[in-house]
Length: 158
Length: 211
Image 1: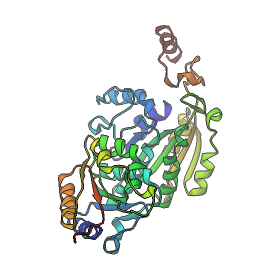
Image 2 (image 1 turned 45 degrees about the vertical axis):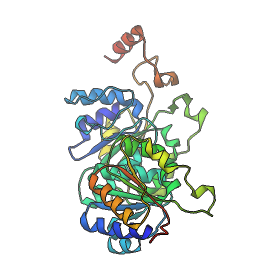
Image 3 (image 1 turned 30 degrees about the vertical axis):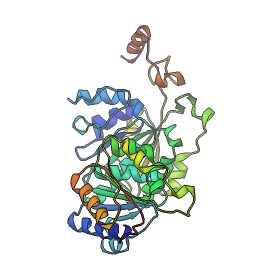
Image 4 (image 1 turned 180 degrees about the horizontal axis):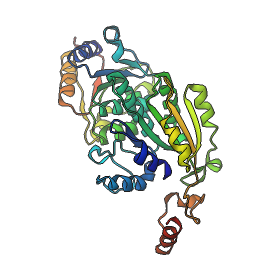
């Protein structure tokens, strides 16, 4: 699913000059994107809360940010930033989180991303199960213009 | 108060954006917006409402500066003019996002950001130095790569030049030394007025002292 993610961010960046990719020092499946769109690629470092706020600010100014990280660092650590800056302000930020680390310990496993994202008022969440669904979810989330969360896992079907 | 009046009356252009990150000070902002024909919802903390001049939801501390940084970076990418002004409280500077944002703004050379610190030395429950003492934040910001100006936050002759100052490649921090409740004798420098409504008599006294 991360491979599909890598392909789809390139597709979105080709389609829309306002598309921009942010990550918190988790550069996964973005080598091609980074090489092709260096001016729209930001590894902001380990500032997850600020990264969410910045993505909201970029969206306010008309950009279409996608924020990528490992799911607990994307959803749980900056949860209040997502609640206030993205969900309450209802700005079109895409959040994409990867979580499938069965042997990485409790820090790298989300408690319940599905339950956590269900309680938002405006954020639409997607839980694709394979590569095709991942691309489709990302395209749909982008085209909807709504704030969104897309969960990625290891794809054993591809 | 003086900082907000200076911004709204003399500094902000149509291209600029203002975020009141210390959202609990919103009542002064509401008055200034209503004077200009806007009609923001009168709640204890402001909600995003661009049509009425509220660009960012604030109230929970430490949100305005990161959002402002995103707006500033977007404008850099888009080649658009205008500066992003953010007023923050000194208690708010205890939040981790303040320090994250200080590093980030300097690293990305966001010289279209102006962070104004309302340094009144009081936070929600008392004096800052009794709760979590703050270091010389201006000195630290300068070390990180900000341009820093320290002013008397009640003196327009110091406020206005500071707000107009710009240093290429560096975000600007204005440390504005202020007195909470300035101009109302029984409020000045008294922590309990951080979040308290005056009685009818107190209100009358304040009105007489200010006019």
